[in-house]
Structure formats: structure tokens, C-alpha cells
Amino acid sequence: MVLPPLSLDRTAGSLSRQLYDGLRVAILAGQFRVGTRMPSTRALAASLDVSRNTVHQAFEQLILEGLLEGRQGAGTFVAEMPRGIPIGPGAGELSEPRGRRLLSQQGRAIRDVAAKWPEPIQLPGESRGRAFGMGAPADLFPTSVWRRLLGQCWDALSRARGLGRAEHEPLREAIAEHLGTTRGVRCTPDQVIVVSGSQQGIALTATVLLDPDDSVWVEDPGYFGAHTAFVGWGARVVPVAVDDEGLSVEVGQRRAADAKLAHVTPTHQFPLGKTMPLRRRAELLAWAQAADAWILEEDYDSEFRYSGAPLAALQGIDPNQRVIYLGSFSKSMYSGLRMAYLVVPRDLAPAFRAARQVVGGPPPVLEQAVVARFLSEGHLDRHLRRMRRVYAQRQRCLAESVGEQLDGLLRVEPDETGMHLVGWLRAGVSAEEVCRRAAAEGLELLPLSSYRARAGPEGVLLGFSEVDERALRHGVSLLRKALV
Ligand SMILES: Cc1ncc(COP(=O)(O)O)c(C=O)c1O
Image (cartoon, rainbow, N blue to C red; front, side):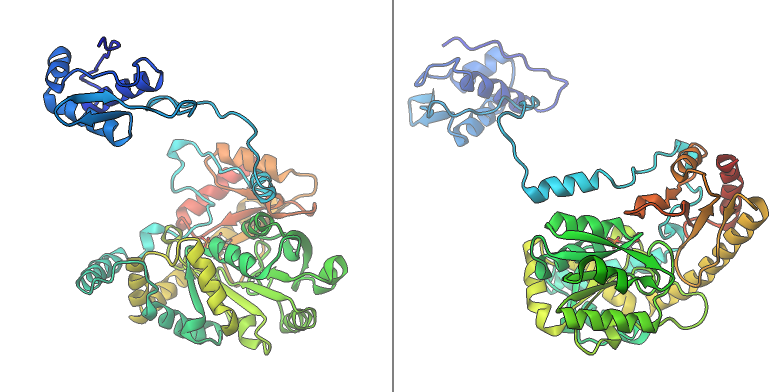
């Protein structure tokens, strides 16, 4: 037989892979008739100046895929292929999508709502370590403890053949204990569902409790991650105005009295920072009970309280088991850990566990075990005590610097909780424009409007947790350039 020219590039990786690709494309393109005998591996190797093994490996792969067939004692032949099966081109080439390619209604909805998320801020390369990002600082995390625990947990789990997919019981116990003492959450470990981040917790809640087209109250302004998860589930998202006491139950009832769920951040409203007082909490709980609805309580940064005692979680004061509590280790440890926890009413726990199974099960058991020891051995409490001191100082520094350097241009109010402040702009100043100009100075600033469904006073979010006081002061001086 005459082979098509096969050019092998000795500098471009595996030769057998290149030979396989070349033959595959030729066979699929119909360049050989069915039943054609291939040259022997010896002859082909000699003509291409490669080893016999290289040819053998390429043939083996083509036989495995059914493009060639080996006949005992007779050689290797081009196999019979069903005609009319369109098979794509060789490796390295991408075929063009063809035909009607319809997304589901929910696929379209989630794509469209995600397109409205704030653009990731593109900072100049040398800007690392500049203000005003919203994450936890990596350099203050007790990495030596973490490394030691990782090693020990790996050894213990692998000895016990425990590295497979599993829920780690000691972690659920440690979380239940931690939330009981710090947040007044009342639960047993079987109500704790460990998930891969808050976002997954919100999505699971939607899966288990909402039907498509059910109405959901979300705070306005509020966390767009929640908004997207509900839209993605096909729910009807109803933005409900936030006042000084958090989500307005009265407005919610006016806009959608039949809502099936309310997503709230009562400890520290995201992003405005208000705390929901007891009176409003009671009102919300009463609505949920009367409407057969649920409350998803997000307690995303309650660990960082700088004065006074926090109000206990809604979950702990609800007599009717209507609250799904959601907390995350993203702020208290680091966000790349991707670990959060739901505390669900006991009767809902099996459904939540099954829903989590559908999206991949619990997070990796090694990290679950490390976090369990981090909690039960007191490392988390120690880390939080330290971070509260650090963040309180950083917040004070930010507020003072803004007062000194940006008087009349930007106004901030101190906050008893959290890792960011809202910077209020003068009337008529565009927050988007300020953020764009700040990015050119290397500052990571987000406009409040990104979190709003309806227009309102303009402001920017100033994270103060990530960088030290010197960088914050410098950040404020750079911010001045974006404001004048
Ligand atoms: C309101 C709110 N919830 C949750 C999170 C964290 O989400 P995750 O646990 O998915 O990292 C954030 C992070 O900024 C947040 O602002």
C-alpha cells in the first residue's frame, strides 16, 4: 500500500502519538480502503526511521479504537467502519460547533445573570499587596500548624484506608460544637452538611427546597452569588430593599407574599453592614412559619466582631425549624480551602445529603480531617482571636486615613463586624468611574452598584483585611487621585 506522507517532528513530543494522529486522520478521511493491509511494523519503522516499538504503540491504539484490526499471522488491516459516522479531526484541531445548540432555560438564565457579575478587576502586575481587596491575608495564616496537621492526617487516614470519599464525623462534631458556643446555633452533628463553599450550600438549598418559578426574597443590595444560584435554579428572584434593620419583611410581603424562601445576612448585612435587631428577626421568623417558607441565614463573616457580643444566630432562636444556617471557612481560614457548612433542620438532612451526593459528595476527606483537628485543638479560636485584633487595627487605620486624607470626598462609618467598609461617595460621582480610575492606580475597589438591583446612593467597598496599615494608608492616598 502507499501511505500518505507522514511527517514526524522529532522536537514535538511523542513520535508514536504523532504517527497515531497521522494514521487516524488518514483512515477517517477514507484514504485507505477497508481491508487494506498495513505495512509491517518493521517496514514502517524503517521507512520513517523510528523504532518498531513506536509503530507498534500507534497500531495498538488504532486497533483499540477499532480503526485497524490485527489478524493472527496475517498482519494488520484497515477495519470495516460504519459509514456516515461523523468523527472529528485529529488531535490538536478543533472542529466548529454545528447545528442547533440549545441551552436549557436555566442554562440561559444562569449564563445571562453571570454576565452581569462585576468584572474581575485587572490590576497592573506590580499591584500585589495593594489595598482594598476583600479576602483573608495568606501571610497571617498559621501555615506551620496546617502543614503539620496535613502530614499527620494523611498518615492516619492512609493507615486506616480512609482516604476515599467520606464524610468525616469528627468535623461535623467540631462544627456543631463551635457553632453552639460561638453563634448560639442549636444542632446535633447529623444536621451539619459540609459543602465545598457557600455557593454550593446556596445551590443545594435551592435544589432541595425550591421548585422552578418559586419566588425567593434576596436582599437589595445583596450578595450576587446567592442571586445567581437562585436564578440558575429557575426561581423567581425578588429583590427586597434593605433598611437600617436589614431585609424589610414588610416590603417582601408586599412584593411576593407567597415567597418560598428568604436569603438573609442578619449578623452583618452584605454589603451594607447593618445588624438585624431582634424585633426584625422575630418578624421574619413569624412570616416564614405563617407562609410555610424557609429562611437561608448566611453568617459569612460573623467571626470578626470587634466590640460587644454578637446576637445569636436566627437558627438558634427559631422555635419552628424553618432556618437553614450557612457558614464558611473562606473568611475565617482562607477562601481557596473551598469549605463551608450548612446546618439544616433534622427532617431535611437526608434530602440535603442526597443532593450533595449528586454534585460530587463532601469535600476531600483529608481537608475535612485537617479542619476538624484545627477546630478541636483550638487553633481556629487562637487564629480568630489574633485576626480580630489585627482587623480591628486595620479598620481603625482605614477609617482614620479616609477621615484625614479624603475629607469631603469619601465618607466611611466604623463597623463593629466584618472585613470591609462602605465608602460613600458625594452625590453625582459615578462609583464605576471611581473604580476604573482606582484600578489604574492598582487598587481593588468594587462599586456598590454591582450588588444592587435598583439604583441607590453610590458607594464603593473597601476591604481592609488583606493588607497591613502602611499599605492601607498608601492605598487611601492613591484613592484620592481617583476621587478628585
Ligand atoms: C455574603 C457572602 N457569602 C459568602 C461568601 C464566601 O463564599 P464562599 O464560601 O463560596 O467562598 C462571601 C465572600 O465574599 C460573601 O460575601
